[in-house]
Image (cartoon, rainbow, N blue to C red):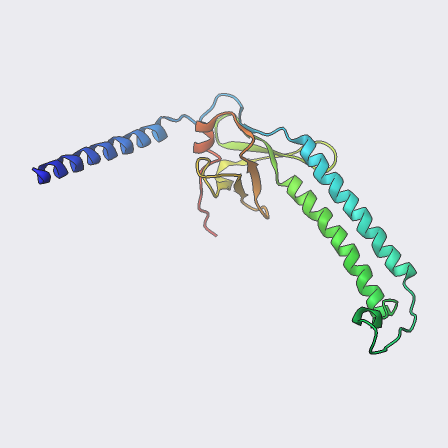
Length: 209
């Protein structure tokens, strides 16, 4: 009796698996990506946040640049006491050329690095993703540190999603062939057409070098 029940459960499981597979296959085949007009797949209106990010980057760049100039202009080469009773940092002559130049360069690089990261993050954040008429191309619109949005159109064959929409938690990284780094789709944004997204820009593509 127990063997019969196990066989019955196994048959039911197999039937459900086959049905699921058929549904997935039919769903993929039934999706018509040959759209008759441009379709917005994704949008994210987060202008205020990126303005704050870039304001922070510019402010930090200004602060560290000022600190760099101050270090270069005000630190004087004055001999310091080498007494054993002095703490270690009091024995360092920060006005000596090697120390002054090092502090100047390091301060400037920190400011420049913060600004570069904030700008790069802004330029790689996707604001709109548009499937163009015909379904063979997509337009990616990103934020910019200053001025209007940045946009470019490319073939879908040159876009690869490294993570599916259903599996992503915070961001979906989009790899664009010929571009450095990834473009980031924030999951807090709005997916206007999930089916078309999953079967066009949301696909993972393998390119041959």
